Image 1 (cartoon, rainbow, N blue to C red):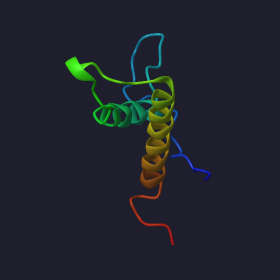
Image 2: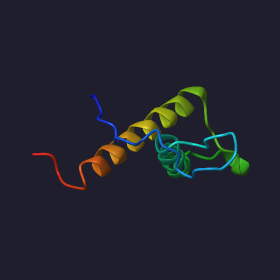
Image 3: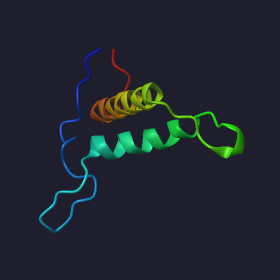
Image 4: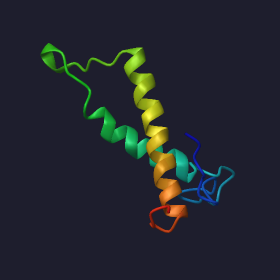
Length: 82
């Protein structure tokens, strides 16, 4: 599946006045998606989370997919593709 990115997805989500650009919109949306996905991680006894390398990789990949889908939808103006 190939994603079309929002034309300005590389623009900073929160522009700064310093020498750093901050995170871009894709990174920001992916971080928000990752935050939600991490709430689904199973817990072991004692409250420890059970997050293995494969699960962490899957969550990271899904977060980017969700960010790309949101940017694509924003680029389309919220209209379904026809």
